[in-house]
Amino acid sequence: MLMEQPLKQRLIGATILISLAVIFIPMLVGHDPTESEVISIDIPEAPKDLDVPLLALPDHEPEQLAEVSISKESGVRIIKGEKPSIPPAPKIETVEGISAWVVQVGSFSDKKNAEDLTTKLKTAGFTAFVEESTGKNGDVYRVRVGPELSREKAEAVNKKLKEEQKLLNTIVVQYP
Image (tube, rainbow, N blue to C red; front, side, top):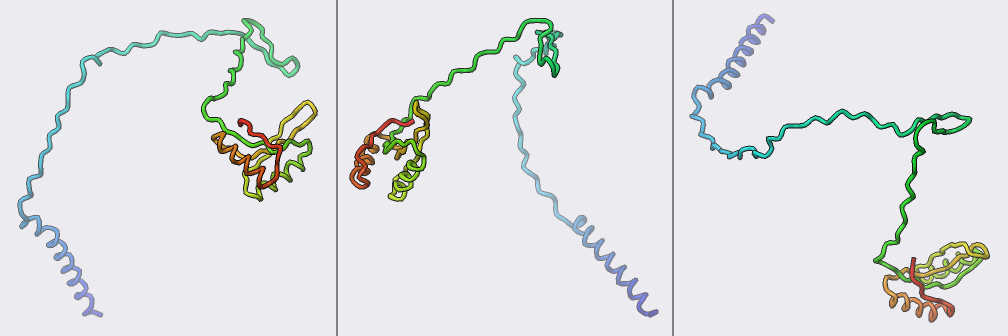
């Protein structure tokens, strides 16, 4: 055991000396650093028209339109001031442009009949759907096939429905 202690100290000392040599010798013996390329950037001068001083906003007192009281019993009441006016709702305008065409196959008052026909047409490979609307005599369920972007394609689907499905009372209508 006595022999091992001096050996450990010598090994630790040798390791420290080698580490210092690895760090410092390249600094002393190294070559001159290469000149790095100097890049110059020409920065333009600031525009002269930006020399406008900042102006502070004038003090503004909030405008009180009305004094309102809210309670569970009477709801909202205006105590003092003008009654606020509510602008009318914007008018909904239809977007012109793309229109489609569908083949109306039938119109039913019973939803089950409309769904049965739709299932039959889907099984045959047509894109059928039911459109529900309310008429004078109650709900109406229209069975339609399509939509198609051109009337000619819708007419071709109509002809195919008449030949394959024997549906004779079909019409082509614009959709929606």
